Length: 604
Figure: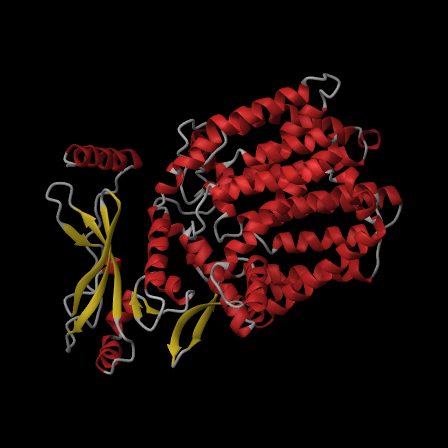
């Protein structure tokens, strides 16, 4: 079955046919896999009967710790869409799954006599597990964009509970407490726990796979094997690069089969490889659409992965992990302790794998999973956009941060004979939390860098102020409005199909037409110039309604369309301005800082 899945997934179907299959069957495949996974967990629960010894495994103090730390991570951040493209696209996919049971991002959607209808959609490159879970919340509670926040709010407690469990299995309750506290010191985790992305689910699935891998090492039976395989399928359906964790899962299976003298096979084990078929088919989107790699977002790069990128990325990694200003949502205490522990943990991994028969099942599972974490970290190091101090890319460091937590716990467990080991580490973590992490969360400097996310929240403020939603918005990011059940069209469509918009404008199909635009500020004169992708041309007469300045050099504006001139003057988009001289990040920052300093001096 595994060979059949490989042949069908990678060689048999063309990219277009593969994407068509995912479009028609993707929702039902992920639904079936999730139900099957839930059934295997139920079987494990009946076998282990954890409720009989829950006080020993999860004492009331540990439960209160998980609840308290989870609340700390949630209350210091504002709920909202933090990374515009990823989170809104995921929400759009969940919308398509909820309305039509197809994993399509809506391209067109309109309010038709009080009922919002999705008219057209497109398959997105992002995996389907997170949108499926959000769509399930839509199914149970009604469609609300905020269901993405509800999911992540619940997942933060699941993650902390799993971290405690994994740490406790390795070195007792103190190790579990340390793992929870170290995660709590990470502002980046709080930022994602209150957003709408799939990063938190990815951490949960990685930790759950590790926990089930530990269980499989302890009791290599068929129910454990089925649960481990199914969680690895769902992990591969969470983030693209998380398929790398199939490597440690495969090594765990091979080790158990070798020790048993034969493969452990039943019908579920035989057919599980076919569940990876949707993953393989979905990956063909990168062949069908070259833009899926988003290479254009970072000029100067020709390949998505290269060994040479390591020399570019590594200094940015150091800038992220060891920043002490609070501008990069890192945890300085976790970075210091983690990177001190990491070399010793790698030595421990080699030692543990060399003497696997004597090391015990829990250390062996941790050592094997370290291979997956190492592979993931190297992939990010060789990624063309792997600079962790970039506001958009910081979230990709979360699996490495999780590995640092495990490294600290693992190395500390080797010094268990020293009675002060755990109190000292817990004390240092507490000091880091209260002296660095909580102040950084309070200042939110790391959120200010990504002004696009704050613009998205501003759009949502407009929707709350205008709850009737019977208007049409012209915006390059039309999907933001569509996912909130507001009729919208991108700027290029407003230019190419001006006659259609004019017809609707004259016939009052919508109570109002609005346009979202972003303007660049001339540092010398203060004059505003509309950015090319927001330029509607001279045929659209606009009247400013809302205006806000999110950066010193840009102004965001929401305007009402007062009139649309007839004729063909703007039938085609205006020509793009000639390319400006490419500035280095240092040059851009110097210009921005100089302008900002002058602005501060001129304040009343």
